[in-house]
Image (cartoon, rainbow, N blue to C red; front, side, top):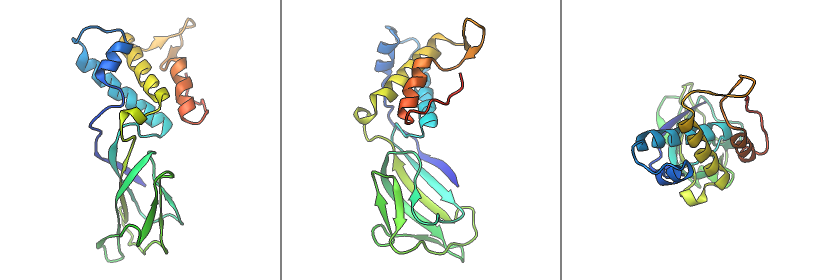
Length: 192
């Protein structure tokens, strides 16, 4: 399975002004740096939690259909744009929503009405394009926003890896780890 970003987010869940306020920065000289760190922090939180915090369009391709329900990555799912497949002759066929498949928006899954159609032996035999992420910044969990702001502030202040009293490198502050664990369902597995 391959996941490709089709349309990048156009808005971040935490604004540049919110990042400046959190980091106690009262000038605009470093706005480009802060905005870049904010995007990197959002991407870090998304990668760790598996969530899509900013709305974006993705395409999932696979060599074959799953045995039944296809759970799409990057929750929350906003909508499924298209479901296509390559038939045994290589032609791309678009399936019809509600006729060929149904979408479970809260669960982020699609399933066939009857059965998935036969596909040819191609790396992109199955092609599902979907929009994932929170529809607006107001819907993003506050713990995710706080993790983004804290990471941005930490990276802004610590241009080099931070070290503990014992000299060990610590890449992510402990309070950010706790927030990420909460978002991920309570599992705190990130290395210090």
